[in-house]
Length: 146
Image (cartoon, rainbow, N blue to C red; front, side):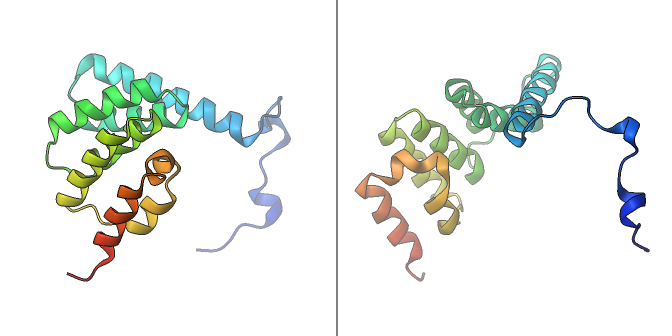
């Protein structure tokens, strides 16, 4: 496929936004849009895993951790052996400072197959739980060859 010239790739003047918003504001608008769409889908099917996952992620991104927690608990109820659901629940619990429960959910995520140690060590949603010495022990245990 041929590449477009820079001039051809540039949007026409009439297509440029009339207001300038920064990237953070764009992200906020995007996540609020996802929440609106996802909640509409959930009114039709309250057990839609796709809609729940989208809304849970968006709530986390806009900082509404209580609503994200509710969504993540619903997802774990629907998919009780899914490692990502348990991981996301651990993140929501960590964001809310519920470290005991967050560690329990991390243990479950790992038991069900979650093993991305590098991501867990830098995920901002786990910042609170990373301060707990039990988190380091858990990561050391995961890093050991099996």
